Image 1 (cartoon, helix red, strand yellow):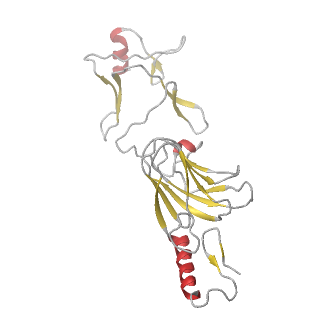
Image 2: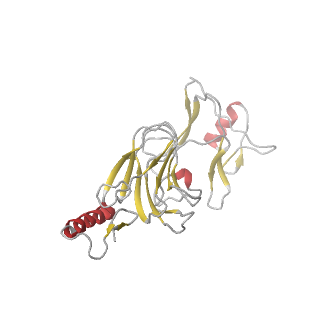
Image 3: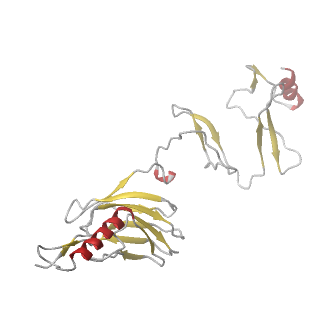
Length: 253
């Protein structure tokens, strides 16, 4: 009776088979197991839209799908699909190191089970489990590693202070900041080609924080606009809304 092979290429020897080479084959099997449990491979998937099948190599090391971590590399100019045989059951650490704004999908070679896809902007890592849970439509289950792509998280929560690291926060027109109850607290309106804006500055002990008009123009007024019959107030008192009177009221109350 001849040997058979597991989906990941391990040789399953029959009783009494391979006299004189049993030890060599067993050592190879152990190397395959070691590769499956902790091996790494970089898989180049460069090119236009295509499907790439990860290779299996029965009874020998080097099978692409028989590695714990698979890093996808290369410049891609179209969406990619990477497949494994329908009977493979293991988990993978996947890394998307491709360049190019296209998706990379990891799935079984056939069937309509769940798949995993790196979005066009997600150049990160993922942990997936190839379940082989159905002989026709097996699933690729995603195991959470925390937030990998904020776009895919519909209710992200910070675990600490947000440091913008010298970058800006961009708000869409008519969007802004809400309070903890979901109520609007600060709304931003955009102006095409804007050059003037507010500068809010905090202050050390004995000094006052300030709100200033800054920008490209030499002279910039500050326009405070109440709604309806409302009024501009300072410390609860209404202010005049013309000329120097409002400035005097702001200074002297």
